[in-house]
Figure 1 (tube, rainbow, N blue to C red):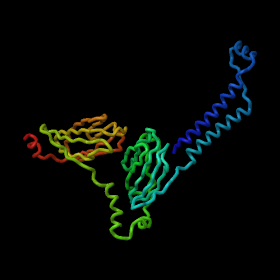
Figure 2: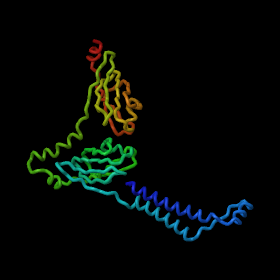
Figure 3: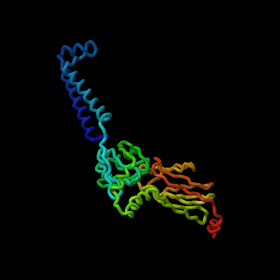
Figure 4: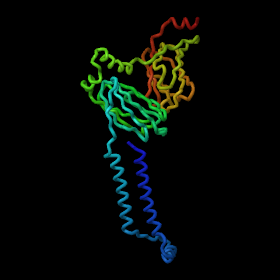
Amino acid sequence: MFKQSAMLGSLTAFGILLGITSGGAFAQTPHDEHHMEQTKQTGEFQRIDQPLWLKGTVTAGGLGLIGLELWWFLLSKPKSRKASTQGGIQEVTVTVDGGYEPSQIVVQAGQPVRLNFDRKDPSSCLEEIRFPDFRIAQDLPLNQVTAIDFTPDKPGRYEFTCGMNMFRGVVEVQAGDRTATVATVPETTPSVASIHHPAEPTVSPATSTEANMTPTGIQEATVTVAKGYQPKRVIVEAGHPVRLQFDRQNPSHCYDQLLIPDFAIAVNLEPETTTVEFTPEQPGEYEFMCGMKMNRGVIEVHAPHHAHPEKAVA
């Protein structure tokens, strides 16, 4: 993981090396007037031989800088931390300051995870955290702790990144340890049930709304674009025009664009209400998503009911 200290160290070393080189060049420049006049007369460049000690210093400095960079990128290992379990939830605090620390988090599969991101770096690159495998994209307010909850079901390595994919970390999910799970659960039977209960909301059905039929026969619904889409599921009927109004309240670049692939729709969402219109002909589920395909919602199309057009006319 990139650190600001490493960057500053590299820049400082490069500056010193450049200073030595330029200093040596200037030290060799003031030759006597005879050489200068001879150069002017011949019109050719005069070769300046630098002393051996200066060449050795420059070479050693360059090799040292290259070695430092190779060690940092290839040999240095990210700091790892194992989550501590409290109340059936695996919890770790991650400091967001020039990267993520720790940048590698070890948890167990099948148990809820809560990562507390304490953002201290004002860089715009770190104002958002993303977990592509868990479809999570969350803003991180400066000087605040933001909790991210999810439940990994399968062992593996799951990457999280900043909004610009510059800074990265890894959640290493290991196979569940039954003994560890039992140790965190009280002996009474009701408590065992309560331990597994928190995992259920992570797979609970998304909030839904049914579009309203206007007197003109258009199905209308409003979707708020904040922390995802609210509601995430819009229910409409086939064969009738649909008008969805997306009220964008989140400035994250992830929401700059709205995609509805099945209806060939790709529109930019301004920081106001954007209207999208289409007519679904066949029943089914049609997905809509942000431009980065991180946040998603569903348009659920039902078979048409004959009663609705009559009500709309009345």
